[in-house]
Length: 416
Image (cartoon, rainbow, N blue to C red; front, side):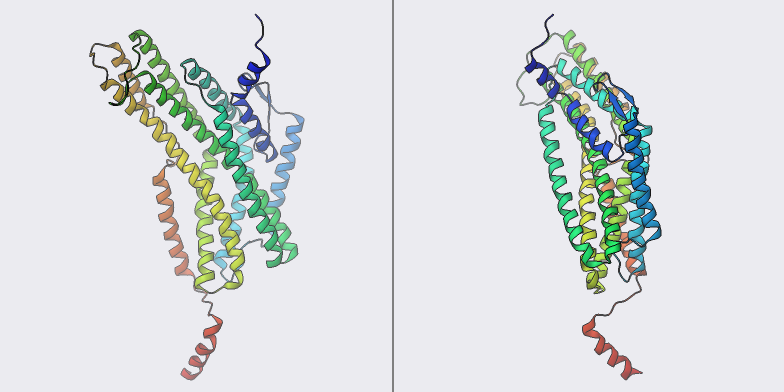
């Protein structure tokens, strides 16, 4: 048998998830999240740890330990105000983020086989979907990913430039260098970790949507749909059984994702919660307590908080889409049953079994403690508002504006 032409080989290679995953692995390896090497392609590759991987892991973790040492022995709070709450809180948040980067690198190494299994199973699932005539558009996914990554990099570089420009003017030069190294390193590492989570969730959502499109392709699910070319019941039963198996595989992949990224998902919520509280409280101190000397620092910190808040919102949105799209498959299946007018058709029984399977095997993105959906987002907003009110109530350090100091001073003397 003659080998396929070079153009076909190039097209097959480009239409695979492998190219995008390879770029992800390079970025993750640089920041210590992929301390392993793939021997071969994604479908038959074996994971191994080379000498270069050990050197990169040692250099990355050494940098993280050095940042922990700096923040343990120095007051490296980006927001340094008259409020001890903000000083201690911002330092705790920075230490929390640094520690989480180190813990994430360890977890990603321990669960490297499970992580790579997610990619390999997605690759096999794409091949099985293409056998049903549903081709996954990898080119479009690559294009969307590079656009999102490019926008994220531009925003990160802009935020980094603002931080590098303003910090040396606000604090002592010996402190500003340590602060810049700490914040930019940790923020870059967290950006790569969050992009990985968002990419996987978006990939799972697209594959659930493709399964739903497959059902719409073979069955009538809406009243205004045109009649589909009638296939033999035996063929349709095989198609339903295959789609049920693919849906079950995707639910398994979601379970592997939950197990592999439990700690990272918890980190997303905890970081969103803590940074949002202290950054909003810092803005309150500036505008209500008239601490205008810390205005630039508070704005920089709040801008970084908004930067990562967008990632958190994107991850919650994508997780909600995965759950909703995976569960909506049951709705489409029941609609297909309603438009089969022959009650004795065996296809109805296969569709009902498919529906029963989804009743017991629904995809849910969770971190073992709570589900990632918009209910969680509203809970975070309510809890943030509650704790900000608590901090304001405990904020007894009143800074009196200069324009009122003379009046208050005279009033105090006359009263005395």
